[in-house]
Image 1 (cartoon, rainbow, N blue to C red):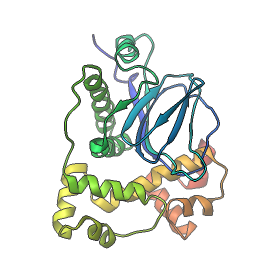
Image 2: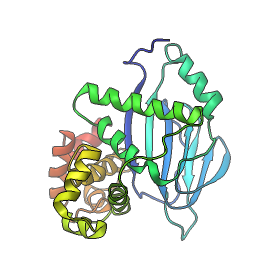
Image 3: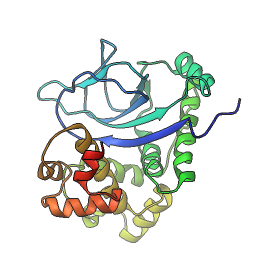
Image 4: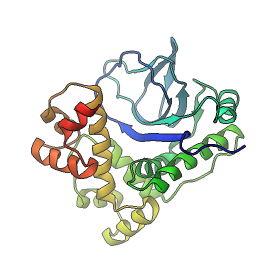
Length: 261
């Protein structure tokens, strides 16, 4: 069956920042996929409260109310969220396979080896060129089919790259530089930069900033927090420096981005 590319579209793959311990039930008009990176808590899907932990992968269909819940004193659920638009008619075969072979609210234990995969999808989904964004869509759908037939790829990338990605995700809300990152990984700086760029497609600190900006964009669209607070949430002490970097990343100032919604 042929699928219309302009309908089946991955709109965004981003890291969800720490904005609170419990979110109000909400729904979207796209399929929403979750990959838990760290933290422990529960996820409410259609009224069912299910325990989740790192490495879990699951989805909700359009219109299904859901929310993440973390107990007081627990670690918030750091997660990648992917929004995938599927047309009920043109993508009927994919939707049917998703429903019967993957299943809404069915948890798949991917483990931690998919961090690099989601990092690549995240970068491609916000790329300026349409072919790269289409690549993000089809790579992600390929993962869904790997899951549906029980043969997900066994490995994604170099352990040092996965370690760097883990450090970046766990420090989204903190300032750090390349030297600190390299010290954590324990590799020669030049070698590490080449290794990371070969794997992810961009230098490590460019990706680190992108990760922070994706988190900031979520805060801008889902909260009314002042710009200074948003900047602090993603590790910027200076809101003006943050605004400059955000505009470089998105092409639009944070305030305008929020108003555009």
